[in-house]
Image (tube, rainbow, N blue to C red; front, top):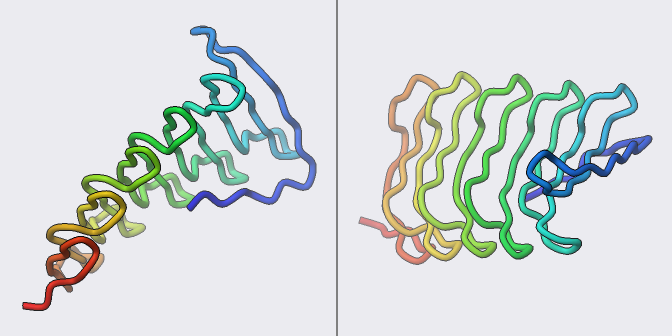
Length: 143
């Protein structure tokens, strides 16, 4: 879920990068980058990223024809990877992983058309498995 950052004073700058792709950047009042968006055309975004007030990246998404499509990643405030997964036409698809603040794997699962489907595992911060199971079309299978 994309969360818009509260920006008291928006500073918007439109640009065209070296490949001719148009975009828009928003800056915090302190001058640090808050948001960056690249556009395919006036209505369709190719890529979007949000930043913490410290300028560390919060989240990055890829788009195709206005829909989430491809790899997405989110980060903790210190820049450590928090989660990563894939979208195809606005639906979660394929492997998903989340991480503890110390960088160790926290959870891994698999999605098919936005529903958990397949094995999943949860880990404590030391890497020990604390829960595991299997899902089919979003329903947990009790063994």
